[in-house]
Every structure is written in structure tokens, then in C-alpha cells.
Image (tube, rainbow, N blue to C red; front, side):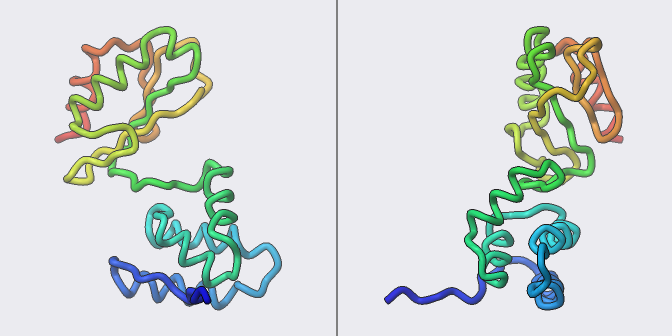
Length: 165
């Protein structure tokens, strides 16, 4: 007989886990509570790592696939941690045709991380994104709220330098 899980072991701060459990307990019997609980979990952790998704599923009595489905369907949910300066490269059609793939390669090299990664110092994270609606400026990348357009790979080092100081 398969043993039913009642929680997930966290390797993080037990105080954060306790906060999450408190939120789940307060709302788990409410209709439509999954999304608000996931939003609160993301506020606590900064993103929704797999063990947090699994913990929510177990405590809510829903399949992990349901939690993951919500997390991947809605763009507000983050599956990877973000750096102090999140860098997003548009890989939509217009940007890609104008060289955004080369920008991504240069950023991976400059930052020493792959897409989806965070630098060891937590300063930068790197993500591929789809169209951000600035096709006239293609290829485009963002650093936080700052938008940079009409870029070539040689522009990357100067852009990153602005945020390192």
C-alpha cells in the first residue's frame, strides 16, 4: 500500500515553511483558494520551486500536476528565482530574426549562467521571453523595467556594466 504524503521536507528556512502552512490552513477550505495560496507562496519564497508546489498540492489535497498547471499557465508565477536585476531577452519572431539569439548567447557568456539561471551573487538572472511588444526596436532585451533595443552582441558588456556598480 502506498503511503499518503502529508508534507514535504523543506531544505530552506523553517520560518518560511511555517508561514506557508499558516496561509494554507487559513484558506484551504475556501473555493478557488489555490491561486491566492500560490500567490502568497511566491511572495514568501520569491518564486515557486518544485518542493513548494508539491507541498501546496499535498496540503490542499490536489494533484501536483494541478498546481504545476496553474503555475505554468499564468505568467505571474515564477518557476525560477530572480536576481536583483532580471534580464529578459525577447526571442519572439521579429527579435529572433534580427539576432536576439546571438544576444542570448553573449549574455550567457558574460554572466556565466544559462537561460533560467541566476548568478552566484544573486545580482542577475537570465530568462528568454516571447514578444514584449517592442518589435520596432528589435532585437530587444530588458533589465528589470529598463528596455534596450536595436542591439548587437557588442552592446551587452556595456549594458551589464551599468548594473554592476
